[in-house]
Length: 290
Image 1: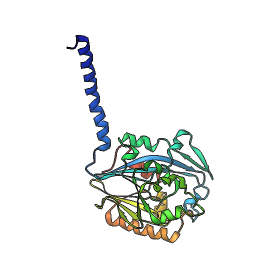
Image 2: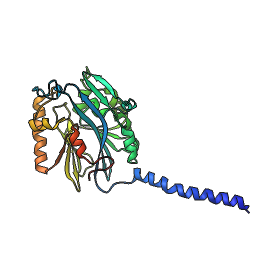
Image 3: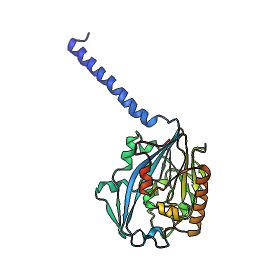
């Protein structure tokens, strides 16, 4: 038989254990439980400040003018899994609170890491089912290698271009190296991620050869389209301005025409990913659109 003190200690240990189990179970459930309908989370994955925004129009409207862009990532939760759309600037930048100068009058910063924001949702990188990219410029691939356990949905033309010699301007191949050992889904046109029409990648070349946008069909909010770099600013959309850094002007204008027609036909909410006002208009993380 147990002595009184031993019995008391044992009962105390059992009580503590029972109190801890629900908390642990809740944390696990947050990561593991499937959602009932599609959700869109907008994450802050960096900022860019420019002394000269001239690169964002080939007709001179921004020459010599300063400006700033945001660099978001997006988490799309679906009953069948989780998609990361664009992975922002690298989390390593967050170690420098003042950011870094990237040359040519460009200053980059990351106020909070992508990994921290995923954790706030109860997700680890290994919980992500798919990762996909509007294109392979470094400000969209900075954290891509976190998702080596996910299936990478990759546009064939974009991959061939990014791996070309010499390396295209704005591409850092080291940020996408994990695709070589990850499961991949190579695509060359529109693609239905979950097979039910609710999350579709739409072909929109011009900024880069395999540039894409993302179309979501949400139960309450309707159709939402994430721009990638089809545009960088609201003015570019209004006046159909084409950045000097785009690989093909004619393809850009053709993609603009196509995507804008889809926006009109579906009454979509169009989100310019790099535009600070469009980013602010989305629910503040960890709130979401559904």
